[in-house]
Structures are given as C-alpha cells and as structure tokens.
Length: 60
Image (tube, rainbow, N blue to C red):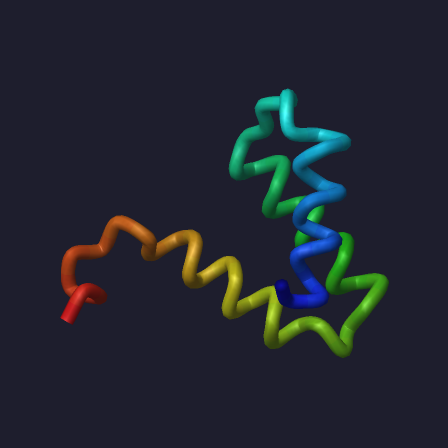
C-alpha cells in the first residue's frame, strides 16, 4: 500500500457517495495548487492523465 492510499481511502469513505462535475474538480485542483504551489507539477500530471484516459493513442 502506498502512503497516498490512505488519503484516497479517506476521500472515498467521506465523499464516495457524492457526484461532482469535472468543472468542480478543476476548481478544487486550482485552489489546492494556489494553497500548495509545490504540488503544481503533480496536480498538472494528474489532471492531464485524467483528461487523456480514453485516448487510444496512449495505449501504445
């Protein structure tokens, strides 16, 4: 188990029943980076990964 799994598990247990839009998620990510600028690159990588999940070209 990675250390980050704890945060993911907490997120799932606290908010797992909620439905959110990607617009809402994008705003929360922007807020997080504004408060924690050292995490700009990991957040950008996560956002890019989520945006491209269904791209067929990435399977190669």
